[in-house]
Structures are given as C-alpha cells and as structure tokens.
Length: 339
Ligand code: AQP
Image 1 (cartoon, rainbow, N blue to C red):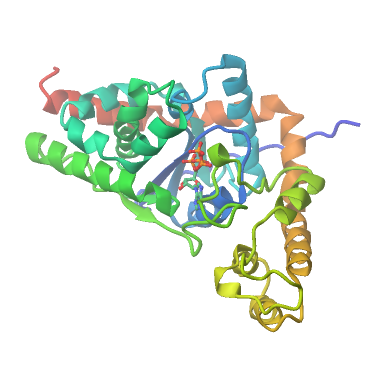
Image 2 (spheres, rainbow, N blue to C red; image 1 turned 45 degrees about the horizontal axis):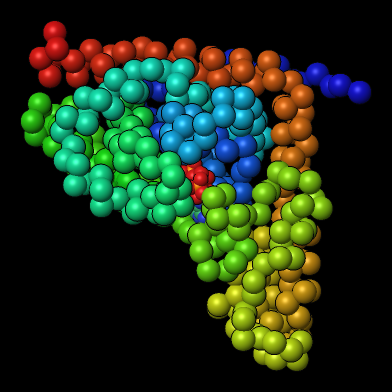
C-alpha cells in the first residue's frame, strides 16, 4: 500500500539578522553513524538558530563516482536521508550543488588566488591519491577550492562538519584572506562547528568511519544490516577471554554507548569489571542504534517511495538561493575587473 506524504510546509523567511551557516555532504546514498554523530546532528540542531543552507555536493562526488545513473540515484537518496534525519525545508534550505552553477564559476575565480602548493599539502588529497591511484583526476586536487566557493558564495561564517574537514576549512580561510587582501573585503572567514563526536571511529576501531574504508554502520539500513555491522566491531583487542577485565577507554563500542543512553558509565563499568562481555555490549549498542533510527528509517523509505516530493524540495531550495548566489557573483566579477 502506498501512503501519501504530508504536504511540505511553506518556507519561513529567514530573519536577516540570523547568521548564515553552510555545509555540504557527498551523495553516497549510505549515511553512516559518523556522518550523523559528527555532522548531521548539528545540521538539525542549528537550522533553528541560523539561516542554514545544506548542499548535496554532487560535483564533489564526481571526483570518485563516474556512473551517471548511480550518481543520480545517490543524490536523491542523500536528500531523502537528510530529510528523514530531521532537516526541515521550512527551516533550512536544502539543494544540490550542480543546480546552482555559480559555484563552479566562483571556484575558478578563487583558483586564481590559490597557490598549487596549498592544495598539494591537503591531507585528503594525499589519502585519495592512495585510495584511487588509477584515477588521480585534477578535481581531486582542486576539490578544496570548490568547497571554499560552496561556502563563501553564500557568505556563510559557520560550517558544521566533522573533524576530518578541519584542514579544508583552514584552507578556505586562507583562500578568503588572500582574496580579501587582493580585491577588498568580500567574504567572511568560515569557521568549523563540531559536535561532541567530531571523529567517529569505524568498525575496525582504529580509522575514521568512512564509506571508502568499508568500516561503516549504516544508520538507515535494514536492522539486520545494522546488527551485522555492529557485531563486526573490533573491541578491546587485549580482552581475549570473557573473564578478562576490559578497557572501555580504548573500546569503540563502549565509547559509542556515550551517545545512546545516560547509563554509558554503568556499561563501561560492566566491561571494566568483566560483569559483561563484549558481545553483550555490542548487542545492546545494536538494539539502541536500531531503535534510535527506526522512525528515520521509516520516513526515509517513505520519501524514497515519493521521489517527486524530494525532487521538489531540492528544486525549490536551488531557486531560493539564486538571488544570493547571483549577488555574490556580481560583486566578485566587479571587484576582479570582469565588468
Ligand atoms: N567518521 C566521521 N566522524 C565524524 N564526522 C564524519 N563525517 C564523515 N565521516 C565522519 C562528516 O560527515 C560530513 C559529510 O561527509 P562527507 O560527505 O565529506 O564525507 P563522507 O563521504 O560521508 O565521508 P566518508 O565516509 O569519509 O567519505 P569517503 O570515504 O567517500 O571519503 C562531513 O562534515 C564529515 O566531516
């Protein structure tokens, strides 16, 4: 049986005095716990306090995804996921990067003030070169310039992101400083806003949770998938026997419990004293993750079944931003002597 979605409420005009925030997320279609705890929770929280602009960065995804059909599907899935997790189109603007082509024009202009050496030292560029050695395309190198353009085209001053984005944000600030000193004060220097989980480790317990590393917990997946992923988590590697005392401070499962209930200290104590085993702690975490995201998963499936609703929200978002993007481009072209 198909259900009809509730109508999307009319957008609320943002009061001018609210500071503006911007953040982008790649359309991978598979939102993981790191995305949510590290960034999306802040998107949701901040949409009431700020004039919030959130972008599905499909141009960025092209640096690694070259299948048009896959990219199209993933873009819509990411939009559905963000809406399901709490983005409210009445309180924020959600859109797709390529629907506002001014971003790429600004990126070109910012590239003229960005030394190549700044880009070459970016940690993510170095990582991506190793991850996809047969596809070290030019856009991987210039990615941070487009990211800077995404933010500053709306003159956003705050950027909710995970810790892995710190270096990119620093680079954005350097680009802004150079531009402002060459052409006059134009852009604010954007600053990162972190959650209390700025880096979520993956199921391997060592590296950042990351799609490309395959160590994720996919929060909107089927509960059976979530359980399997949680049960695969590496815990305290020195705890061999059930009777061994655990070290919750180095156990990723115990650390994640902090975000899933007020009793996390008790859970950690159970591990420390061997009252509970790692399997018990994982089972409990899996139960809690499944329960926490159950409503969002239902909403996600509903949205995926109504693609026109999702597409309408994205289209409306891009239209709403047109005057802001065009005004910035007019100002920048004028300052750079293109008029
Ligand atoms: N493990 C994480 N801990 C905290 N925050 C995280 N973020 C990502 N992973 C973690 C934050 O989520 C937002 C969106 O991420 P993104 O689109 O830049 O990157 P991603 O593609 O979802 O991250 P992955 O999984 O690491 O992607 P790949 O493997 O493709 O490079 C960002 O604010 C990010 O900081």
